Image (cartoon, rainbow, N blue to C red):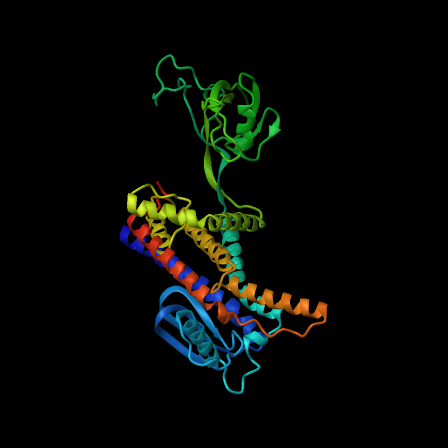
Length: 437
């Protein structure tokens, strides 16, 4: 059964990835067709063709390796002029790219080419793919946050400690002489719902906990709901030592490196966890946070990849916040599927992974380097700036930018991407990230 669940988690992520790629390419396809560009192919995946169907002038199909996709637009670049036989590797690469581009320009459709579109239309076509991943990420995070909900500590009491255990002890059970815990002494019971603490209504356990922790040694009136009735009692938190943490949840230390301790109130209550549906805008907030996280990772990507290489060759521990390959994401999805937790927990985590994957596709594709979408956007913007400058200075309008000259750089970028992908796959097989403990 575990094997089937594991494979089911991987299949879930593969289908989600294929849909994400398909929608990404639709984000390019639809505006390209609306703007009159001839589109010869719409393909999901690379490698051998598994299935295809010709509909009108466009061939739609699926290939064997679901690691990306593409659409073939007519005339991505201006047609080349006959410059004779190329000599040298880079010159030959440029000439091959120009020849391939020329073949996409069908006879009689010379005006239905991408490079002749106004700059703003070219930007829309190239931004459309990443934008679809952004929209899909927002929708998935909205389903997770506002549909399923975010797991939170509720005001319902899960358990009440019988006693106050000595600080720093390894003792786990109460012994004769241990003082009774404040919540037990106040008569609070599992299943009670906290309504107010010290006269303040509480909607979350965090609110109740904050009041208790801020009131060591003080008598606090508490109102709970029990079996449909309100019950009043008095709770007196005992002083306890707790290490101070910063806004990021990291321990605070003094100038000597020793932990900074604070005196807080302790009651001996734990709360029940439940999925709480969040406001509809939470999905957008989660998306923004994810975009920031991925962008930060990309800025430090060389260092991250160096760390990954070290884990492969030295056996060091893998950074759980580092990049993953498709293999790593699939493996993680399989592990989530076999965890001993309720189905809703596993579904929520799988959807979160899929949402995060779409945000990674959105940010990564906007890197301003060819062959990524961001590179094509930069080329269009550069041409727009040149045309604007020529207009402002009264000069002759420049020719369209010939991006085939950047083919050598494009090849270098592509090789680096393939190399990084291969390294991540090896790392995910030999030293997988362990996020589940």
